[in-house]
Image (cartoon, rainbow over all chains, first blue to last red; front, side, top):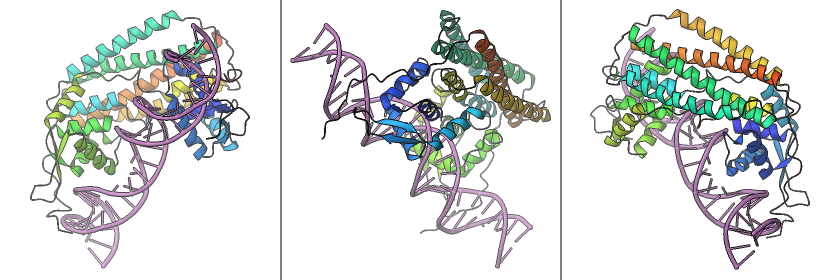
Length: 195
Length: 195
DNA sequence: ACAGCCATGTAACTTGTTACATGATTTT
DNA sequence: AAAATCATGTAACAAGTTACATGGCTGT
C-alpha cells in the first residue's frame, strides 16, 4: 500500500497531473525505490475509483489533473497519524524460510544462515559506503534519502544479529526436524463419487 | 513469494494432498502467520502451471496428491542455497512514509515518529511477553516459532532505534520541506487534439 | 530529419487473500 | 439429527509491476 498512500499524500499538497506525480515521487523517494510510470497511472485510477481523488480534464492545457477529495484528505490524515503495523501483517520471507528450514529434514541450516549472513553483510558494507558520500544533508531530498539508507542499514544489522542469535540458539538446542506428519487424516472425501 | 516457496519446500519432503500441505504449513509456521486454505489450492495450481509440481489423482483414496517435479526440486535447492535479498527489492512502508513525510510541508514529523515509536514499543513488549512463555524449545516446531518471534523482536528493536536515530538527525539538520515542484514542465501533449 | 523526453494510458501479468460453495465423514 | 471437521475447489479482487502503444514537443 505504500505507493498508493504516497501518491495520495503528494496529491494532498496540490493537484497534479500523472507525470508530475511521478516526478514528485521520484524527487523524494525515487533514487532508492523508483516507480514505473505506468504504475502511477494505474494507482491514480484506483484512487479515483475509490473516491479519494477526482480526475479533472477541464484545464486548457492538455494535462489531466488529479485532485484529492475530502475523503482522500481524511485518508492521508489517518495514514500520517496512525502507526504502521508490520509484525503481524506482512510475512517476512527470510524469517519464514529459516523457520521452515529448521523443521524440515535434510536442510543444512548452518549453510543457509552462513550464506544469508554473507550476503546481508555485503549489502551492509555497500550501504555504508553509499551513505558516507552524503553526510550532513542540506536539502529535504538528501535528508529523505539518508533516512531510507539508514533504515536499510538498521534492518540489515538487525538481520545479521538475528542470524547470529539463531545460529547460537540452534547449536544450543539441538532438536530434530520432523518429516511430513505421518499419514493423512483420511476423513472427508474418500472414494470420490461421480457427479 | 514466501508461501509459494514454502509449499514447494514442503512438497519436496514428499507428495501431499492440499489439506495436508495446509496442515504441514500450519504446524510449522501457522501459529504466527496462518494461511487461508483457499490460498493453498490456488498456490498449488500455480505451481502445477509452472511445472514445479504434478497433480496426481490416480490414488484409490479420493485425495488429489501433489508431487514435486525435477524442476521443482531444482527450485527448492536454489531457494535454500541462495540468500534472500530484501533491501533493494521490497519497498518498506514505514521507511517510505517517513522519508516522504520529511519532504512534505505541513506534516508534523516529530508526531509521526512519536506515534510510531509508541506503537512499535508496545509490539515489542507484547512479543517479549509472548516469548518468555516458551524459552528452551523442545521440539522443532517450538524452535521455529521462537525464531519467528526473535525475528520480529529484532526487527522491532531496529525500528525503534532507527526512529530514535532519525529524530536526532531531524533535530540536528533542520532542512525545510518543499512544496510541489513549482510549475509543470509543460511540454508534451498541450492543447489536446481531437481524435 | 531524427533522437529523446514529455505525457497518457492500456494490457497483461504476478502473488496474496478472502469469501463462498459443495460434499463427505466424523463426532456429539 | 446436528455440528464440526475434512477436503477441494472457484470467483473475485487487491496491489504491484512491466512492456508496450501512441502522440506531441524540443533540441541537435
